[in-house]
Length: 385
Image (cartoon, rainbow, N blue to C red):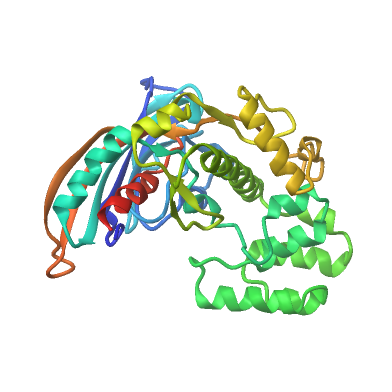
């Protein structure tokens, strides 16, 4: 068990900040718990009286855990503040907005609880230190994915505008409260009866879209433009990440004998047991691109796997050149197929005060930008049982 309490999952950005004494962008250290980064940015924009586009950051952080990251606000005023679930502390200036290019990685300190044997967990950590893990995008990336209705972005690529709107407006996630889930189910049941659906809209963004459809009942493509760009970007990234994961899954199945499997939100996560196995298959030297109309494919195996995958889904690379939402587009980048946690260490072991009779282990390690600490924990738990 992880994330039993926010302090059980500490994340701190490793970042290169050439901070200045003055500049157009004020730098802040943002400490938060219970907020995703995009949600908190929207909240900060409201309380500080600035545009959400004026706030920039290097990476999105999960809501579950205690995280520290840097943000910039394009405004010279000091907006330092402290509320119940976050603190914003001014730390100097930059002459440019913060971006992912400045982020070098993340340092983690994670408490794993409810273990039968902490010694076995410590031994497993030693194995993970040498074998590394496949660099899958973990479940956090797929919170917008609806197993019943599919991926929003896949609907866009198929030019299924009505379906894309339905996914956006009616899908539910575990984080939503009971009322929002009920309203979204009601919108689904009232689909195309726009005046009645509008009365059930769960929030202002949904009301804006449904109000437009009430006046323009069949203009689905135009209604899509009412969706905030950052929400579209999240959903595009989720589908790209799913395709990337599927390519890696297919490669693992082709090259690793009897990989260990752990169930995931959009498919299995497959693990090798020894560093020799992964090294022999070339995972540590392999980069896989995310799907886009233009993408660099440095490995013939990956080119073949992507070709098979897209044929299975009846898609082509040219489909990613969509003009439906021209403000947001599919951009390809290379991602390492495998990652080795840096400085993985057992900080502490002992009785678990939250689970009498059970043990806990505290781990610290660092990962490159975009890699998931939860993937390291999944691999560790394979050896713990």
